[in-house]
Amino acid sequence: MERNSLKSVVMTVISCSATLAGIAFFLGITATPGSAYMLVFALPLLFAVRLSASRSARQRPEAARKERLRNIVWVIAAALSVVINIFNYYHARHEMAVSAAAFGQYYARHGRYPETLAAAGLGGKISCLRYHWIDGKPLLLCKDPLLLFEHYQYDFQHRRWLEDNGEPVADQPEDET
Image (cartoon, rainbow, N blue to C red):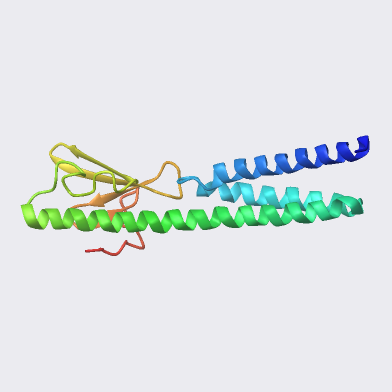
C-alpha cells in the first residue's frame, strides 16, 4: 500500500469519526428530554455550517461527494432529533393522562388521594412524575419534555393539568381510564 493511499484512508477515518462525534454531540444536546428548545439554536447553526462546507466543496470536486454524504447524514440526524422530541412530547402526554386517571380511580375507591405513587399503582411506571404532600395537600408534577426547567402541575380540585404559570394546559391529555 502506498503512503499516499494510507494517508487518504486515515484522513477519511478521522473525518468520518469527527462527523459521527459531532452527530452524537448534536443528538445529546437536542434529543434528550427537556432539551428540544436547543433545536432553535442548533438547526440554524447546523444549516449555516453545512451550507458553508458545501460551498467550499464545490471548489474541490474530489471533496463534493464526501460533503453530499455528510449533508445527507446530518439531515438524517436532524430529522431523528425532531422525531425523538415529538415522541417525548406524546409519551409525556400519555403518562400525564395515565397518572391523572390512576389518581382519579384511587380517589373514587378510597375517598382520598394516595400517599405515594406506588399506592396509586404508578410506582416506577411513570418517569416524568414527582409526587409529594405539602401542608396536607397532594402535589403532582410532571416534567415538560420539551423545556428544561418547566413542569406541569396537576390541579386535583378541577382535575386538569396546569402550566408553570397556573394556566390550564391548552391541549389537556385525554383521561385513559
